[in-house]
Image (tube, rainbow, N blue to C red; front, side, top):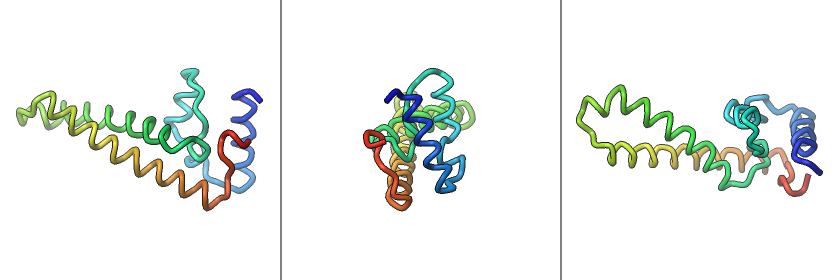
Length: 115
């Protein structure tokens, strides 16, 4: 089964059980699909992939925003800003991955490999 077929099946399955669009395919996932990056919908993705995608996205955006609005004027060094961004991204990524892991268990969804 190709990626697109699996993706359509996963989205149809989530629509069938009336999951919200924001949980089925959040903005980040749809953006990655438009860029041609084949990632499974978050409820079907492995835990580590959700941590990486959500944490990397959040950490880089949040860190850049904080650098230009607050940290630069406070005299925060680049290394300290990078550490803070990585910590925030890891924290956010873990929480999002836990949320999607919980959602998969509650909705009794199969793993990506079992579609």
